[in-house]
Image (cartoon, rainbow, N blue to C red):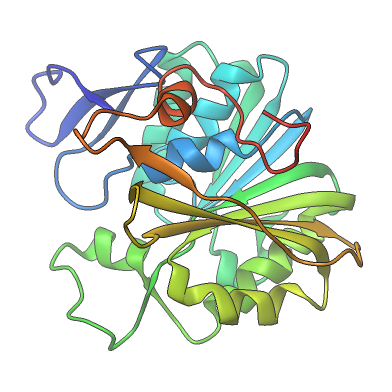
Length: 258
């Protein structure tokens, strides 16, 4: 993410992504998208129809749209202010004709979304990371809502993704490594060919994020992939991270992807 001069708004900044290929407004305070959203977008190798759960102001969705110029993208978020900003960001980046951002509560169930089932090849999701009571909630209410999960969050999001995906479609989620056991538990009844990609800040460090990608209706075994390392020892981006975060290259979830 590149921080640009703001647009003279006391509430928003304009930030560049993918090496400045797109520029998006997002709140200066509260939840702000960064590397997680760009990595999530890079998990989509190719697709005609993509849906993002928890789209916020549209960063991951529009990063997908910048790389896959024929893709049609739906973004869903429960925050009406963020959905309005995502819609404006799409227009500002000439993607209004192939994006649709809707305000709906994912945890209220698929029927609440008013979408046709089984229509997407790819669903990407950035669910709330932290469990209620795990740590003090952020003081900003919007940020707290985006980051604090309920007991049913993971099950609800995975079930919703399964309903949205066509047969053999893919779900990719970005999350904390400690969430892996519970994510596997909710994924395995509906998904297989689960591939886990650890994200390391630098070589020798522990993973701070995982990307977990799974195929609906598959029975294939789980695969733990080699990690993606973001920084060299001198804090410069690794060539792999540079290619993904700035140049828009797809992540390699199989030996033939990327």
